[in-house]
Length: 217
Image (cartoon, rainbow, N blue to C red; front, side, top):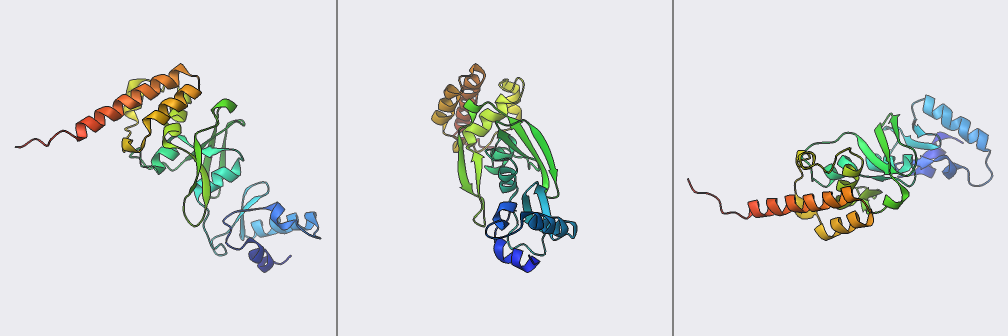
């Protein structure tokens, strides 16, 4: 296979897997050797075994970090502070993409960034949605309510009031407080139920403060 043929097959896809090239009458070993050569030559970026992105001179669409995270570990979704920052619910920029998975925890270094995967139990794998993050790239990301609960679940003493205030949550009008309570109940976790109550209290306090009339000098 020639490289221009690969470009034709991949087209505008930001990421592709080896299986995309194995349809029809092809020699799998030859394809894998070609991929290895193109990676060494700097034409491809290998993210994990079998997952590639075209290098910048050749790609038409840059892969979104959240898409990379989804594809690095199948069945995962972006959550915790990465999701909260995406929604504008915390003031900090978060360069590290953190996802949750029922697989083993891992931190993976790639040429396109660093990706962390935190383990949660199967019964907590809910509360995420498929969103378009630009250029037609659709990713699985926790809802704002679930991102908060995942953050607390994976943080020792994360339900402590000082810790929750330390997150400096903002734009709390984006939260569906009923859904937050529902997710906490579904988790069957006293820690998360306490968190839902505390976050609801913080949201109500902020809403009341913002409706106070401005003081006159």
